[in-house]
Length: 461
Image 1 (tube, rainbow, N blue to C red):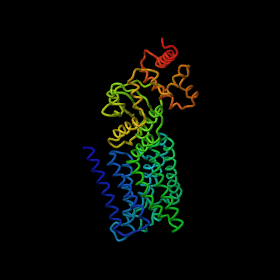
Image 2: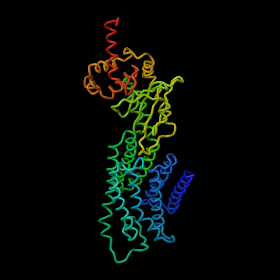
Image 3: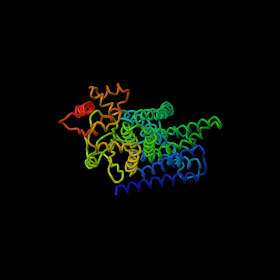
Image 4: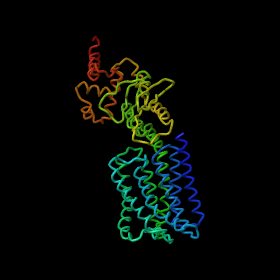
């Protein structure tokens, strides 16, 4: 019921914006105001699209609210410019002072892109100050006709508080504030880029691409026509690009990550960690694990991000029941050969489309089969013997027998921890060594290695 009410309210608001733009456009073409009409339609329609694709998405709500304010500004200025309408002074008033409100909503939309949240808690005070100053500008503009000449309207103001002259204060306050919030946009995008993974960076890239096109149009208009109008009209590309990035960016990043894994064709010892990384980053998750084995005996062979502690074996049922975890089994020829699981960041509202994790599990089965991980799985099902290990795993186990830690093995073999740790996990799994409090798997693996050396040198042993 709540969802239906929200959907109805969204449709009413976007319909109101379309009506305001239609009524304003019927008054004739006024180029200095055309960008406000385009922005109203772009923000409102994109916000509606985001909300229907991602119900309750905060960025969609900000876009829709921005579209409503821009629609009011556009309609007010169009009616004020055409002349001869009842209440023209009040339409002029409505077309001028909400500009600061629209700028505040635009600032929130940019700073909170793409998930509708601030880049970090540290941004609360800068945003509070910026919105407070913009609110003060809107109040001053509503009470005194300080922006009429800049807006290009000639109608008289419906009122102005007597006895106070704010023209000088406005010049000192408004222009630095308007310029300052735009600097804030750049700082917020840069900070989010620094903090984010590849999915959000891809989304930010689309927004930046639209921004570059707008700047190019602005400079071109200034050079050719001596007017910034082309750049103002091109600004409408930014909400369109942002909306597309919010809805489709994560899915594109996910499939691009997995296709990169399949084209890359890494060795078996590094593939599980790479696959886990692709899943985690593609799904915008906090962590991801690639499991191998049957439904009753799943072992972690790829973990992102890397952890020092060993992950205990589990079952498909237990994995699916974990709070905050989404998991899918990986099936080949009707038999379970593993699973994938992700843990989402509760702060993120960038949700994946329904069924996407199922598609990724199916692709994971293809990747596993094509790169030989099925053979590794077959080794799990055989008796735990050292001769089932790959050459790389033999090399790592030999260094373990010499007493080297994982970090020392990395230095000895000139490998990254992303390669050595999955190899150690695979050794434990192939030798049938499960994590429990009563044994040390590293010691048991070394004993198995020494026994195998003994078998080679003395068959009678």
